[in-house]
Image (tube, rainbow, N blue to C red; front, side, top):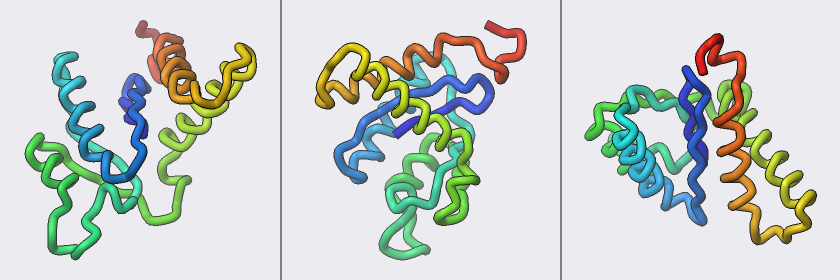
Length: 136
């Protein structure tokens, strides 16, 4: 899963083997953001079951409880509309393509894929892009 700051386009990558680990990774991300001296105010996400309640619409999911505890507003896109998540979808595609190129160029096996994705995000976070305007 990836988290992207919409202002600076800084990206944070976390890996999950199961959707049930999303809450744990999100909490780790929130702790990391706090250590950086910032806070998350708004979370845009797709309507995936890891972000919503599976049982009943009136029952708040664990993920929603975490957001409420940290005073984070949640916004969801419509189901099956990746075009509404343009920033996240483009980032995911870019990271996968860069990681594949890194692995191919170095001649490493697919077991190093997660390291390649983390490295691609690390590189991407250090390049200047249009969202930063004249800031570094």
